[in-house]
Length: 192
Image (cartoon, rainbow, N blue to C red; front, side, top):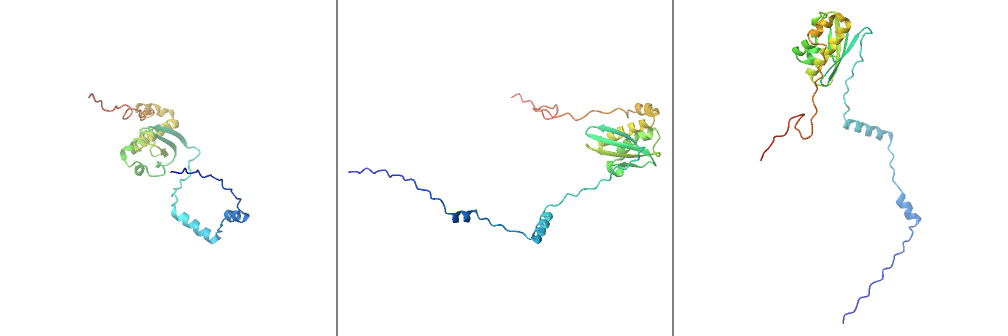
């Protein structure tokens, strides 16, 4: 005959409090103090691992008090233009304009307002341009130079207006829309 097994009684174990010695052993932490020599070597090692960014120092704006200031914009570009009496030196972002724009056509476009009113050798031009590409920057600089030339004398307005140099071209890139490939182009339609 089979005997029924009696279920074992589960007895709860009594938790004994650990002694003070065990607590002290558990809480003890090892602290290693670094000497100043070790700190210097570790900071040198850390600085050698991460190369620092080479930051080009930009000269502060050195413009005379009697300079004429104007702003030009085109697409994503903004040009700050200063004109002051001088010998006809032109600087774009602290560099030679032909070197910066890398195109004689763009340089001629920037200096068109000065050439039309024959102020080429009489004034120095300083242009700081940000944003956009070279063409947008050149067109922004052209508008800035034209506005600065206009502030020299109102007599130049008719000449500048005839050549369309005082009109700001406000066209900008239209944003892409969802469901489209670009601003307006739709995905190819498939009938079947």
